[in-house]
Image (cartoon, rainbow, N blue to C red):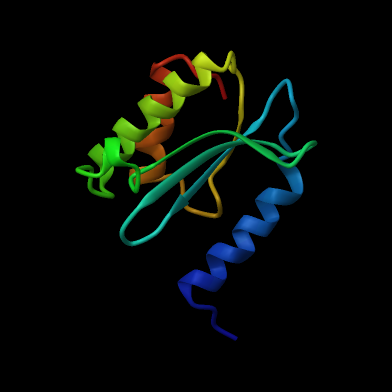
Length: 117
């Protein structure tokens, strides 16, 4: 039976989530990309709390489009916010999205600003 793209992404996401778990020392950087927005969260899965978040829905990033340039600027922002909360190492959860384009751009820019994963 043929799966559509959304079902395939959900299956990939479940496969990744079985292996990726955020702790207080190394929280999880979760990525979600919709057609209109990009959402990033740094999550401590032990406590079930979001430590840091950034998205294109915020006023500060409302002019950003959900393209590669917008993803790169959002990656820089999440890295800066994480460093303010003294978070330097994270586990990367790409949310079932392929590591191309927007996901790669935000990961590279977050690494360039000092976030380790």
